[in-house]
Amino acid sequence: MTKLTGVNHLAMVTGDMDRTIRFWRDLLGLRLVAGLGEPGYRHYFFEISPTDLIAFFEWPGVDPAEERDHGYPNRGPVIFDHVSLGVETDDDLWDLKDRLTAAGFNVSGVVDHGFIHSIYSWDPNGIPIEFSAPVEGRDVRRTPRMADREPTATAREGAEPQPGHWPRDYPSTPAGRRPVYPGAGSRLFGSSGSGRLDPV
Image: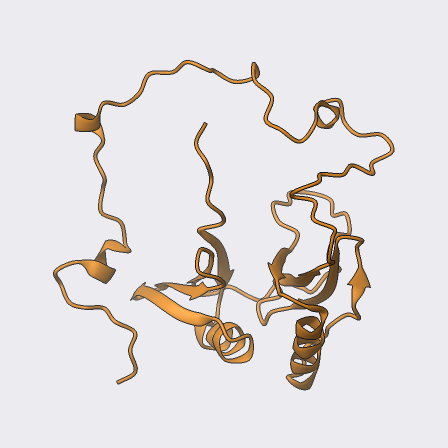
């Protein structure tokens, strides 16, 4: 089975890229590592960690979402609740809480979830953000836990992938028939210029 390596990037939406850069780069300290654009469209990437990025499309006419509590049930079409970004320690949570508060953003107190401690806030686009610090000795990745009193039948099968539910044998596309089509990002490293984001 293919091994996933992490979240390459989460793609969010903004109507104001400058305000988004000020928050994610200048307030939270994430590096702005790639940017694509043309009239009516931008797509910028910020580095969360050595393997994870968060990206934003800027589209005209996009308004910030109304702030709503993280994890509260919604009705109607919903595809996203919040993103949780990891930090190393509780001291990091308190530093972020103080920094966000000083910058005028609403931010919760520290919440103990048993295996992580978290604070909750929103970016300028109304995107709900959780920041989470691990609790020492409580790693659900190493020792999975289920506290649902009535877990679904599928969840009761355990943490590991279960065979027999999807095709096991499928044809492989031959190496000579695997085209890779140029996308917008190919301009970053193409022959049309360096595309570097270094300051002028």
